[in-house]
Image 1 (tube, one colour):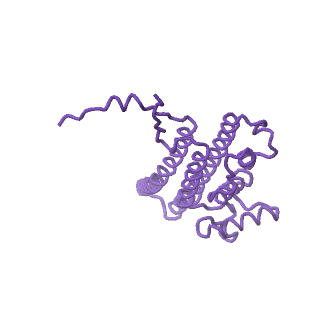
Image 2 (cartoon, one colour):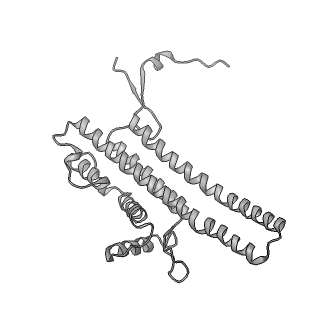
Image 3 (tube, one colour):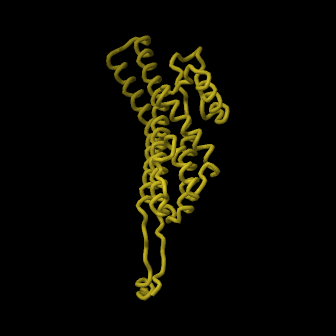
Length: 242
């Protein structure tokens, strides 16, 4: 059966795509894809490297001590460093996208409302300054958003990774923050005990990273709605007045 097209309806509609929305959720989708790719690739890579090590050891007739020493290096790489660096990368990237796109939202709101002051006039830095600006011009108090506590935890984890190499740090304030995160995300944010690791870098679970991405996506859903912008990848469809 031939399906006809209602050309009069098509001619009377406009589809508006917003670059800020597309850019924000495109970047978040990229982070999610990056996370899922590494989560799938690491076990396979670990298995392949162990197989290559066994083949080499058998071919060169290594003794057990030599083989075991090389195997420990592989284990450290795949059981300690790579899982950490995977989640550290995701946390850092996610915070960067959050900060950049939140600042862009503040600038958009400034332009559309023709506010008498700029986002740069707000004291403070990063997500806190942009959040304060949006609240002051009456667009959206993001600090009351359900995801804001999670966003602040994401920021604290990012600072712990970037400024303290993933460790608790030395000051009382930093160590209290680290302990608070470990308590809030028990089993998903874990600092190694000093008796078995001299590194001290925090372990962050893949599942927690997924939760962070989902929380940031939902946050921007609500913020874009407050800014009267199209949701996610959908276009806003409006009818011509004529």
